[in-house]
Length: 41
Image (cartoon, rainbow, N blue to C red; front, side):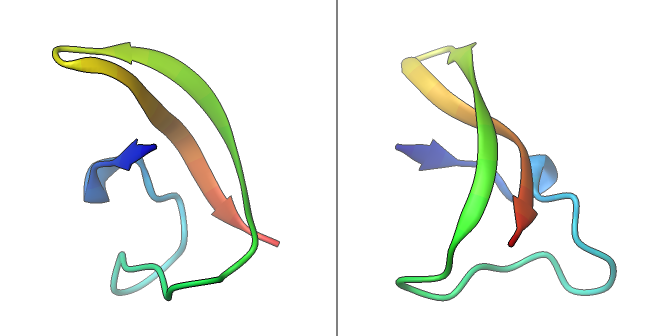
């Protein structure tokens, strides 16, 4: 699943760690499905 940094809703530096648990919505991206409204759990 593609995640653009602008979809990450966390405060501060917008990054994710491998294996980090998140919630997200699936949206249509230019090249297929992409994660939107990504938040850390």
